[in-house]
Image 1 (tube, rainbow, N blue to C red):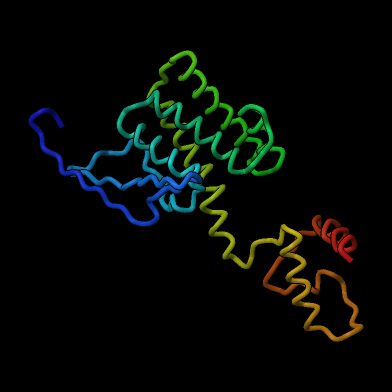
Image 2: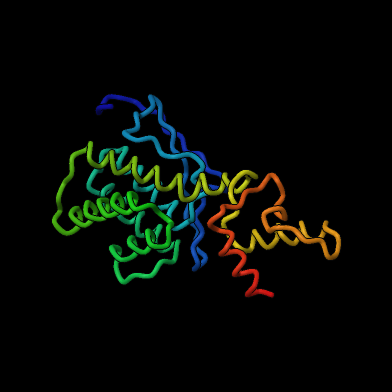
Length: 219
């Protein structure tokens, strides 16, 4: 605002704004409000408490760098966020390139996401090793990609868990629903597998052989 300008600065903090580390240390990450309000280059996503701690702290710091014009630090931070996502997913790999590829092979991200994450990796590497400075619009695009990835992986995934219409995709969930249905049937009653799944849940046709094989293996 200039040397002669005034700005109101307010910090709020609650239990969702603390990051807990394995060594017992606690890092507060207060939410900052200024007036007149600073215009965000990219608005941070909401519900950051749904992010894993290893990702949440890096995300808040990186977005603060971006929105305060520290573009080179933001570029490095976005790369660090990608590595944190890989570590949270516990994918194998001796370097970030391999870990990103394994995210895609495990179907945690899409093939298009894989391309995007490698682009972020390249930007971060260049910013660190070559001290390259990217244009603001390029870093902003990366921020939007990261927001979309985090929203898909963590926030929407958690919200979708509350939807009954989502398909049954994991065997433990399938087994629980099947056992509940069998308990309501008469002894000796015979029916096809699909009819044992309650009507408000869905099972994909191509997943039935997989579930049947696992069911046989657990008998």
